[in-house]
Image 1: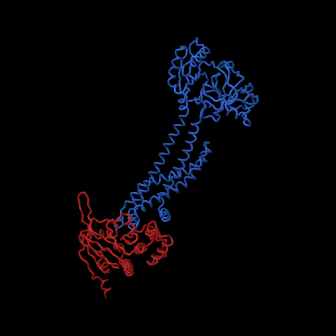
Image 2 (image 1 turned 45 degrees about the vertical axis):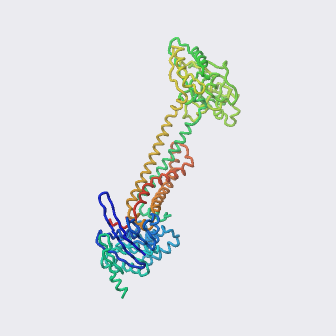
Image 3 (image 1 turned 135 degrees about the horizontal axis):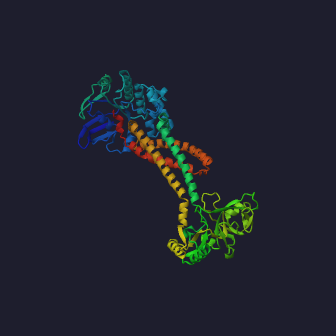
Length: 233
Length: 403
């Protein structure tokens, strides 16, 4: 599903050269649920940006769903993001001036679906996250947990095969965080590959594999997570 | 197209958009009405005077010496002027078109003090008048040398023949202007005067007069102490002959002064200087207003882009291409502009109705409204292009930044 070989990412200014990722390699199989942890500045977000084609890397090879995405044009990257990747952000990133329906509609419009198809998908995903009755509400009228559910619905509406979650519970209390994590786990059980960046070791334990990053490199991969234990019995 | 979501988003955050739309509307109302005034002024300025303007100049002669014999001087001046190589013809007259100063009288088709005459500008000319001014005689005949009378300032009697313009004929005989030739009309209430010729066109000295083309030629030389010579030259020789004529007249008779030599082109320019200035001022106002509106659009769009950087990054992350982001802002501006010009169309018509009623201005030409709507929408799109391009350059990685 996702194959990174010796990815490097260097940020350069006139005075400083910062290696955010160096010789970074990772394989993610279809249906995996991976948590990515590491201290601040370790390269988690850079990894997430590159995995989600939000940023171009400076070296190495990256294949997503069997396709080399190392040198895609901006338009091609946009299309791949739209079709194959769903994003869930720490701050939800809902558009405050749009109601829930229109928020979920955003990626579907870029996909070019017709009106009826978009409506069908929006209603289905909002129903999945339990917010179908509030589709005319604005994000500001929802709790943080509900907003994150809408963001998840938006990520799922295009039926991506790959969901990238950046600290999806970072702005939620523990009760709401658990509810969102259960939803993410359920999405994974339905077959969507998930890579989740988190600071929280408890949440990381819920994935079936934990990748720990330090100084821009994979320092440790743990398969002995709680989820893995449950899955293997 | 994202018109629906963009409209709904605008409606939830509408203060800036409404202000810009109103600015566009006011700009349009002022712009269209100003253009309408300019069109009217330009139309007035473009009216032909009926005379051969480019080849005519005029010069004033004022006698001051005690032994100054005006009649002899005029006769000899005209002979000398007409004999000058390059001069087509020359006359003595009281005025020229567009000069701002001249004579007017009233003509009436029936005698009687109780009847209101039709106002008419008059030019005293001799048999060379038609040729000197370059007028077109439509019907009838020119004056003959024997018909020309000499008139002193105190004289009230009028010659018995006149040549009038087609416009004057239409004013006197609105039902059948073609019948004017040969008819007797009355000047000074009851003095009969026969229309012996109709000329196609000639303007009065006053360009703001609503009867500007109502003119009569009177077969008269004047003895008013000061006079004006009108000289028509062959094409291209006017400027060369002007100093020669000035010198000739100055040297011929020392008991008078010659001054105020001016071409007809200059006379026209001076006559319409106020209108030309108004056109320039209104053009400047329009350009300024449109520029301010464009800057307002740039300001609003730039503010909007800066305020929504995270949102733009999120849209990019969700699959929007750079083109889609630029299109979003262009569409948003188009909606604002469209609302602005729609309100502006109504405002334009209302303002015009007010101006027609209050200042007796002309109605706006219908096509100005759609043209202004289109222009302001295009201005809006050009103005928003920079901010839209800036928005499209927001990287998708902005979506994951926490600060």
